[in-house]
Image (cartoon, rainbow, N blue to C red; front, top):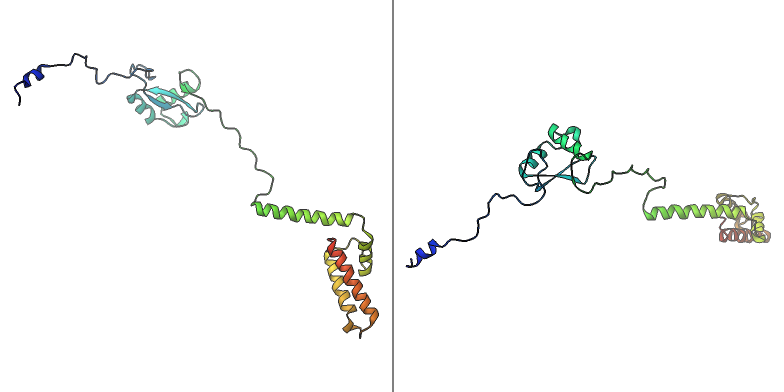
Length: 202
């Protein structure tokens, strides 16, 4: 130990020592009768979402011990603070959140993936197009094709296919011992079916 140790021992700071428990400057605790600083936030709860009260460490613990989001379920003392803050009788901090609006009614549109929706849409479009084809005035070749197959113009695709198969069996050369007239009827049926298929009737 050096000889000048006593010199350093006798030196003292000229600053005034700050109190260890000095309260931080700021708003006071909102608990009735408390003069400490309100350094801790405490949520108000239902009917005042987004707003909070300021308490000291001791009273925020007491407040949160009896706290429930709904004042009806909180401890009596905590519920009183909540109701007073919600009604504007007690000063609060923060910004009040608007109450949630009613949930919108579910959409009437059918749910599903984009692929399924597009498939349904294209199927509906095809159906509408087929109906439009049947409603519109037939071209000369289309009307002749229906006449060749012996069908009315409002025949369904199933009717057209079944009549076409029937005509193929009826006019096939093997069924008519190579009759030339039968071959001509067979070609006419094939052409008629081709015209109807190309124009979307079957």
